[in-house]
Length: 249
Length: 284
Image (tube, rainbow over all chains, first blue to last red; front, side):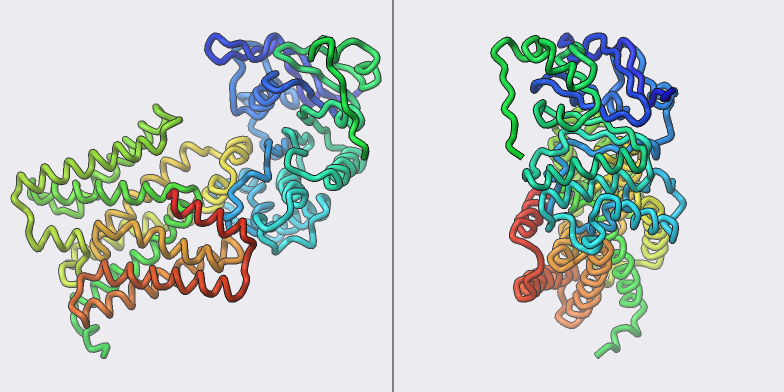
């Protein structure tokens, strides 16, 4: 029996009178790879912000590892790669090593300085993300795909059990995207990391994930990619004329 | 050539100058990278109001400047939280409040005199033993605070949203940092002058950004630049009988131009990086 990593029950959120999320129920179990898809403005990013504790839901409860979100303090168990990571200040003079080390800030606390064990954790994260050779390079000088891997390394450095990725392939070329999905598969299979990815790219996502959740204010579907394609979810989500263009790669 | 170091007032000027040269880039590197350089300008204006308040009421001006700066830091945080979308407006309002209060108090106390000018442009002879003690004590507190929070400050400057999501107490760290900035400006203005103190915060960092190949290296270089500027600026100001603020900041500007030259010759960094940095410096 897999333990639930994340449980949302009856979660709603509104900005003033505008309802963004309406009665969402969703559970992610250990070892799962869940893709959350939905059109622009469907509340995907808001849902992630709630999961990350950046917003509090208007109603309902969110539990991470069985603990209510607002009481959750085990920061190192969750890694987060924000949307559009490649849009950061490219003039920032941080090396890859310095950027990845910053992912240990919360784990170290105020008074502790990084020492040998932390440097080893950085090495491991760089190796896992396949960017060992870039350690001393400046993050701002790397390609989009390389930067994305650096930010994944930063999310992995505290050895999380759950990795949350918000539109991770935006600004990354197709070749790099393919290698990126290979990396995610390795992380899940070899290290048992549970993955939650938000994307608007339904075609690609459903090829990669184990389960799909379709969001557009409400949760329209949660199940396997095969069930997703056999049902009428797509037309209910986007309207009857929706078509998916499959990328040739 | 260095006989001036025998004078007690010059020793004090150099000591206070070295403290300012360490504090300003310590704070400046985070301000510049977060594109908040205008906060330096804001606290300089508030410090001027503080000095004017001191002259008007008879309170020791450095103390009133420190007090008013801390009050402004608290007000700024409150304004920024109320008007989240207009953080720059909060800074502009505080600049206006500071300068208008300063003008009123200076006019009321008929204080357009040499004493005021020493605060505006910096001074090598006006730094008293009490000034130096206060500068050293406040400097030690600021330095200890920033060293303690440097991991958190780096994370927030690099990626505030990720820092927040990782459980870093971002609002608390920001408030402490703004207070540290207020104190840095108030104690550094004695040497460099109110009009030029924010330049010592930003220009050495801007120069270091041109050639630094890591965050650690950039911080180190900004210290080197600030120290070279302050020491040579004080030396020039003594021999040419100039107010020190101008010569110190002019050396900073020369170092900045030289750094751009070094960068071009050495071919450091890509085009996009240069553009991003300039955007950061100009906006801030």
